[in-house]
Image (tube, rainbow, N blue to C red; front, top):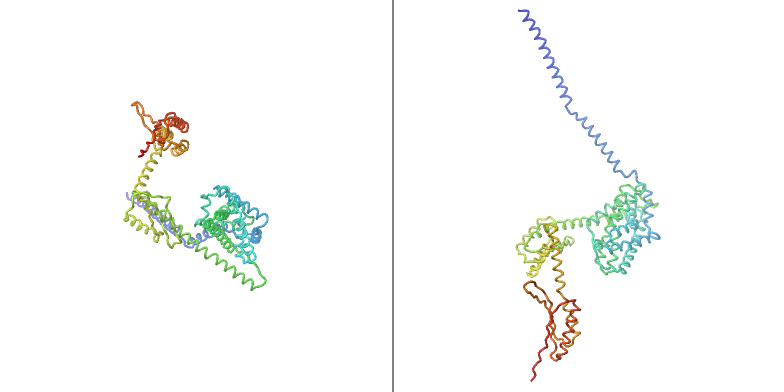
Length: 511
């Protein structure tokens, strides 16, 4: 018995030892896991630096244009494109004709084709590059050829619009009479794309063509010619202003990229001359950049003003139902920020001054309308308002918002029948009465009316004429004239049936 107890104790001791050893192993493993789970700051920093370095290398390879820039070839190519003579001059003249025709007939495709063949970019890019590399000779050539280009373009466009049989304005021409912030942005990014494409080894022709279309230098020059041909100097001045803005920002983009790419400066033997030319180039750059930045800021503010004005009219004024807002007659005038105005027109009942006061207070909640004035033009004529209501009802009826196709067809047939009946029953009375007076000297009065007759089965409408003859006319001549007048009216008005009432003017009694 004791032996059995001893054996059992001996068995329990190894089990305890094994459990103790397994617990120790678990503690050791958990300690190792804790040590492994600890973040090593040095290793993390090294990994982050490696990732940043790889990303930086990737972006540098992706966006770097310095290594693939051919500076000398770019300068030579720009110099070559500056001069306007010979082939370039004739190409410019013909492309101006094509663009003018496209604007005249409002054809966007024709205008785009003209911009593709026009050599307008050369002098403008030459201006920007010459200032960047201090090449005063290139700058002089660029300015002279830019003047030649503008003069030749305006003369050609003016000549075309003077001989063109189509003299009316259109949306294509009107869109080129004033600059917007979008024109400035297009000129900036288009100019950047152009000079980057020109500096690449093996110029990208598609980019140059795309920039020629996007910046749209040619249409404003054609619009200047249109304005001069029609003595509309306001449109001509606005179009020339738009061209100047586009050209300035393209040249400015060329200047910035050329400086960033490190184009070599022109070397002069005389150090004083080199210093003087560098000063002149820097002065020109400042003269161009400062007004350009101000212009960009001013046009950006004007764009914000017009956006807020449009939202104000839509969210506040258009919701007023007692009068009708003429949306197409809304005029927003920025006036360079000195006296901005929103002018709207209403038809119908007079708007109470309290409502207008609420609108003016709400206008101040729009950030860019705080200093703007609201002008309300009203039409207080109730008859006009009634006519407006009738027009709205007629428009609603004529909108054909029917349930199905059959109802629409029936409605259209009814309207067509009413129109045909109205056309049959109406006559050009003024012309007919004048001709009757010429044909019959004894006719002193002439009248017309539609006579409605019913036999209780159907209703018929018969035209009835009324003639009054001179009191001195004889009975026989009166009867002859009646028969002739009736036949003439039937033939003249293509009438099968008519009624002619005839009488003589009473004689005036004499003492």
